[in-house]
Length: 577
Image 1 (spheres, one colour):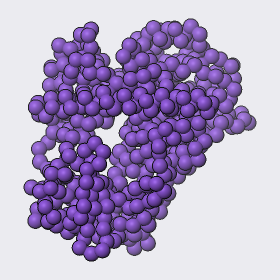
Image 2 (cartoon, rainbow, N blue to C red):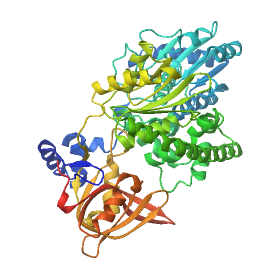
Image 3 (cartoon, rainbow, N blue to C red):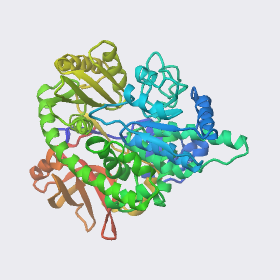
Image 4 (cartoon, rainbow, N blue to C red):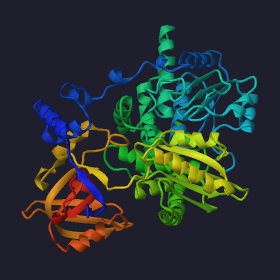
């Protein structure tokens, strides 16, 4: 047995050990030094890494193709007081991208029309009827977080100009548009492929403001809009590397000021405690904004994020909170059925399909399957018209977007697209089996579903007394943590369970003791399904090694150190690697 969750615990390799020692000699705490070494940070770069600044990391917007054309066309619309429409995707990234443009234009004296397609009736991305209708009443249409593959739909704009600001994988040809700003165009270098759409919109606005300064004018304060960029970056599971770290780092500072009515109202209904963190963005705010596009009115999120009216913001936030609760109920039912299907099928791809599965939850359920089975996952809802809509999620090291594009080109999908970690697709109901078999084959070639124990990477070994608020504060300097930038993980040896009790929906609160007076409180999420609860029962008080991440549990004005328990093993079954 490797551990309760079947994983092998892996510490630093010899080169990382040497690097950690060198970083520690610069004055950094040992635990933090070991984490930085695992991240590959050099001793001379440690100080700058711990304080990511936009002025150091923000790329020149003009490194992206069509950037100058897009900025000039936006400014021409402003100067000519033209009618502008924003066509946005229905997720957080699309809503935040739309809100960035709406706010920027508003501060320059223009109002814009925001159009978000209905997930069920219209599906993802621009469609010809909607673009044609917008073109009748607008001089410029800006597509955000969509449009790169929408050749036919954008052709319907006819005499209206179109700008596409996107981050999804591009095809061999570009759609008919004045500009297509997308770091994932095939003719781009890929250096900025990790940006979400809102970050690309932000770069467009940076360039537009720069051109305003050349004209002797002052543009809107973009730094105050970074809360929207941070939200989109985390919610869209963009890797927190490079400039994304700085965007989220600064965006969290802006969010802390609670100046945006929509996000302030949403934080209140979500009962957000303490200073905002990536966790809050990804698990409290993001899902509620997404709930509008999933099972409610598609434009609720964009409206909330761009609202300046307190009463409207409060009403929208409360509506999204209700929709999110409904979404959770639907999601739970579909997850149970999908997991049963995927486990029975096996193979390198976890996939499931069902008649009537709500298209608004298939993406979340795909994420649940990916987490449970550690392999790429696709969940598909079959419609009454013979078509089926699905969402896919990937694991590290497996490029899902490329594989989906491949089977679209092969004719196995009606349409599909996305990026490395996520994709959407439409398939004929009678072609699901063939499409998923082919997708599984392509992903297997990239290493999906490889046998053998998964690794749980451990940064350092600590004793309970070292788990302090001061240590957590020092570790947070290496954040923000999220996709592509995991929080430090620690092992605590030779602990015994002093107390354990179930809480919530399958979670477990545990208090560990090391034999002395010091204790370590922990929570194991979904312990009833991960094997942790069973392992604790089986241990019957025997000593064990435990592993997880430290954070602060805030409750009724108190702040207590807590371990987010991820794995454990009896001391006689050490899961070393």
